[in-house]
Image (cartoon, rainbow, N blue to C red; front, side, top):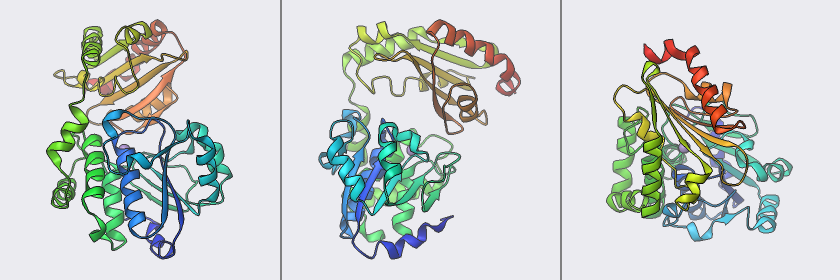
Length: 337
Ligand SMILES: [Mn+2]
């Protein structure tokens, strides 16, 4: 562990009011790490609440402890009070308070001590205790290390194991991304030994399609454009297409990855029109050392990891695609080596 987070050991010896916060639009790693932390801190006798900035997909809701999660967007007063009363605030799977949007103001006002555990690049400087490591594939793997370093390995039972398994599985693309190490597999093996039901978890997260989502995927794949000269693929989805298939938040999760399954493709992007506001949400994926984090930061007001990032465009779909294909010219050398 590369930072001062070890000092938390003595802080956690006294009972604390703790709030645990995942980023907005939480994914498997954000909810898995937050709920694992919830169970862990409760087992030490702390009073703990997970406050998610907003709603998340149903396929994450089977996780133990989910029914206790408070969503800021629908329970603002309760959430604000808990944040105000907190001694300790854990921010998990993000490293900039911008990632919680509407909650940012309340967090900035708070007198609590902040803890950051996260694996994104370039952390901001708001936390007293920081465990940041972009080399690790998931925040859940870091939570495992954290619990271990606190000398509490034995607190990892079925509940914590199931939550951590979920986040490691989703953030490593089911153990296939380069960030998956032998250590990741050792952690996973231990989590299975401690009660994570691996086959059930895969099924609970991934086998939850409905027909309209598969049809939407069909549309996305039909819209896919291969730019052979740049080893790049992009996909578009318009608001009209989303509405045609009864789009619900989370339905397009993972669509962008299909682009990277084309042989030789190193860079894949999906442009999705927001169904409520006038902007285009962009997800970017790459293979190898082409940094979509840099690309998204520079051109799309976003960021993330080297091989997975997000951003946005305020142009029309047509102009967004035009700008993208123009930009690629400057990156040709990097994309074709
Ligand atoms: Mn993550």
